[in-house]
Length: 285
Image (cartoon, rainbow, N blue to C red):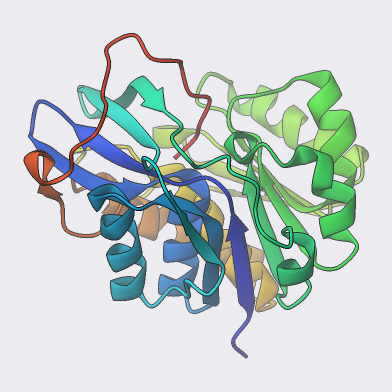
């Protein structure tokens, strides 16, 4: 059974200044790509600019077989994120949001009703739509490192899959966070802890998996890969332990290359208004 997943409103081009390369990225966009790779029918809904960076994103999605039916193009600059690396760990240096937060024609709720699940991240800025989206589809939400009580209380109870980045947590703390999300109403809760593996919790069961071996090059997109794979596997009613194993292996492959996915383009081919000291980005991709 092929399941369908729509992801919404978090796209950037990831700019590696030291390497002189740029890749399509952003949590929601990455999740669409890796859900497609995991066997789902995937679509991305968001806004890119009329510039070369927007064209890069459109082409990257097309090459991955992700539908761009709900991708809108607006005059202006595509969002970007400047990426650094510290022993392979991705570091977000700065961001420019460009037209990525432009009003989406027709809204996101109607398109979501056509899919088995809709995925948002804390960077999507759509938490106010959690209840509406959950009323027409299954909601997946990546909280990244945010454990803000107001955000959790507003969103977790609507989630089919609530995901958290817990690299700063002990195993016990990660498990407590997942169980807390279940107690707040989530159907499934996933906490990833990088090299220390991940835990997936439901009301009845707890599943844990170690990280798969990899040659670490760049962690960018690893968490997105994990979420996309677990979400797709669960929607296909696969065994949760098998879902974690598949996600660990896919995430390890992401870590073994530069950029989240696809072929990088020369940074010189994408004219972006990069300014040192731009606003910080809260993201998990």
